[in-house]
Amino acid sequence: MKIKDINRVPKHMTTIGGQALIEGVMMKGPKDIAIAVRKPDHEIEVKRERLDTPSTKHKFLRLPFIRGVVGLVEAMFIGTKSLMYSAEFFGEDMEKTKFEKALEKKMDPKKAENVEMFFTMLLSFAIVILCFMIAPTFLTNLFKNIVKNPVLLNLIEGLIRIVFFLIYVVSISKMEDVGRVFEYHGAEHKTIHCYENEEELTVENVKKYPTLHPRCGTSFLFMVMIVSILVLSLFGWPNPLQRFFIRILMLPVIAGISYEINKIIGKSGSRLAYILSYPGLWLQKIATTREPDEEQIEVAIEALKGVLVEDKEEDIWK
Image (tube, rainbow, N blue to C red):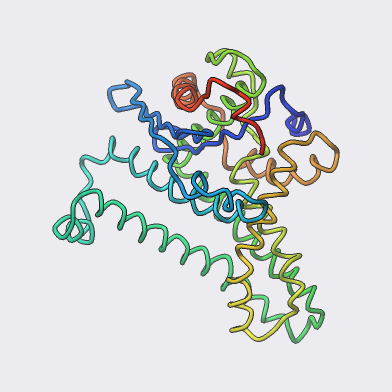
């Protein structure tokens, strides 16, 4: 299926999304989270739990633009927790770090896990800020004596940021273990497509759908980088310290705008939606998704079944 065909509005628009894990898939539905993992003995382990996040409790956090920022943080938390759970099935031979051992001595396992997740997310944010905010703005600053226009400087910075992102994604896609995760990523998308087109969730039905999806997190991140060029251009090109704080403060705004754009794209089959979604879909095609095998599709199906609701009206775009 060609990329242009993916923007056709399906029969049933869903809010269900997911994430590929280590030999597994996590699906997040309107009420539940389900994780399906293919264990070393080839059996599928399914874990289901109630969706209990701040956005499910407070309507304010589901308002336009605010929901994008909140959703990003929640997705990182749920995704990290799900990834750690899937790793437990394959990490028996991995020795725990001194940090993990120290945490387990001082607190119960549940609290230790939450602390570990917090520091993992904190480290992730630090790497993102260093590689995709500080480094691009530092490199762009080398051109400030040649390029005087602040808009052009922000454009150069944005292009450098995109290049860094592309190099990172394409590089990790070459790793064998990451390649397996990207196959599960493809299985996740195929399964959601099948459900959205109201076909029975069978391996044969799922196989015929594409591995690309306009609501994918890859597309969202790409949209963030494009929107950041437009938003940050409004602030000119101040000194390095001011630029750093502006980029940190504007990150929630950029994420909120990007989320709403992706949401509109996901609901539309228009030509404009196709143009806006193309870069993200193209990146999925070349790097972050691969064709899964039948066993991987089976895992994605089990994960999706774990979050389906009886009344489909509860699972529509709000």
